[in-house]
Length: 195
Image 1 (cartoon, rainbow, N blue to C red):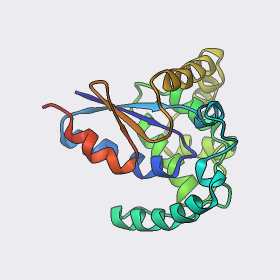
Image 2: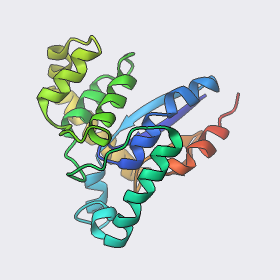
Image 3: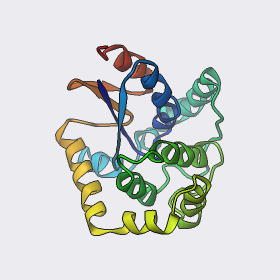
Image 4: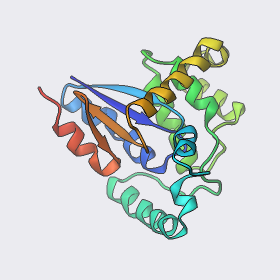
């Protein structure tokens, strides 16, 4: 059975799920369908100019403390990003172009770590190139695929699909059409997987 994982590289709670979902799904014999999309257009459609963690100051203050606790709970590195949310169009396009390739998952995880553990600019082509080369991927070919018109259209369509599915935040999981929202619902989504 499959679990769809809808995420944005700028989403802090997506970071917590991205580093855990692959191994947890494999333990259950399930396949993760990685679904990068862009939260910006979703938020704009809801009337927000930025993340609710930026728009609502009290929620933002809570979230950073919550992230410290959650990262510690899962044994994940954490460093509050100095820029939030970060622009993430390039890694989203690379991850979209990488669908079905073995390096998609580790690429996603390393970009997430660059953002939320190393506080680096993830939309920087130099960083993306570095991550791809570190994975032994032909960086020039991967970046060319990411820049291709069909990849740009696919990511745009994916974001439109997210809105059509009723996605209002990230991470979002779907199991057999059932929606689960938030890192704290990952275990529930995995439990819904049928053997």
